Length: 510
Image 1 (cartoon, rainbow, N blue to C red):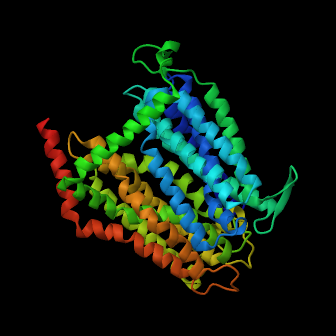
Image 2: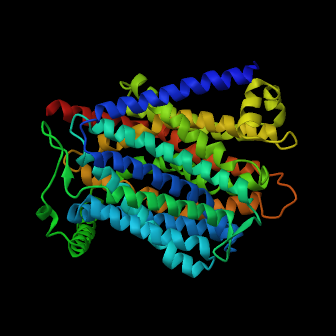
Image 3: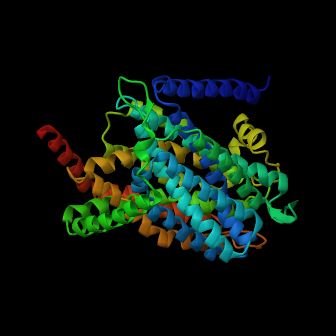
């Protein structure tokens, strides 16, 4: 048996066994939760398969099918992404007013209507009004409501298990979405590949959107199986509230609650914006925006870059969309256990440094990666997994895979700690307001990152060029901007350490 075969069989068995053990550990702790929790998790997987596959397709679809240029497509998606962030801020109040099931049902129906339009039109105005805008609203409704549901369907002792499984299955969904992206493109063909469906010529990207539609149909089935008003009550079996509990709730109540949330949010912004600690808080989180936007580039810049530089037949989705979430599933709980006593600042600094440094691996010349060619490692990655022909740019692809591996190690260190650190440094009694407004730097920066994404591919990997001698500049820009985050953590170390010490002193006084 060849070394590669032995690694595949043994490694696959170990990974599969470890994954099943992780799932079993979570489900064992959550066995007393109502069936609605399982239905939420199933809905989570289906939604992320649909969203993950579409996310990789959006800019490609807007350029190849709709006809937008690289910069226009990048700007369009950047603005659309902002609508999701903005809408999400007000959705929680709707769930409070009309209940989880009704909110999920409305969100799922909106997604169904949005996703059935995309496969059958390329008119940008119809797509904007009837697909992208409702799609943004539907996605914004599904995300926070799923989190609220986990809180309601678990006990205080098991809520961390619920969110741990939530995060694990979310990454499974992302990986599934990237697999769908590559699989459909492989069957239909990406550029110029079309199939006839109901009298319409449907492209590969439109077929991917149609797969998302059927995932949403499955979601509708899961939501309909839920019971209204179910909560988890400690020391008693989970039970559904009487029908009258939600009888007074209506869509009007949801709208009233949403408008009230908008007014309350504006009042919070006015008060908090006048406080100096808030600007310090926002500045610290703003420093971490640069490393967070590497994910934006992997989802929207990398697909075009990969198809143009590496070729249409390369599994672009697998290189990041499958490899990254699969590694995250195993690395995050491992690092959380090993480094649980390490300060958040240290974890942020080490993790962002590793993540940012990894980007520059894509700049390594072929001669440095050549010793890895014709080894079991290159055979495993290039031949067995990605099925790349020898004449393709194998050293570059191998370098990108290694980059994603090391990038993910860094992500598994810093990403979970970012949420914890945000809660840690928020002033006592104002945690909710500060955490809600912590999305503002990310929201504002999308004005820049969307057009930048389009500009990078248009400048260094232009459509139709015979070759791309300066494609490496894409990674210099992404890596250079990402490195601002760890550099900022070093320069403004006192701000971060003082915030941590202040929270420790507050905890001692309680």
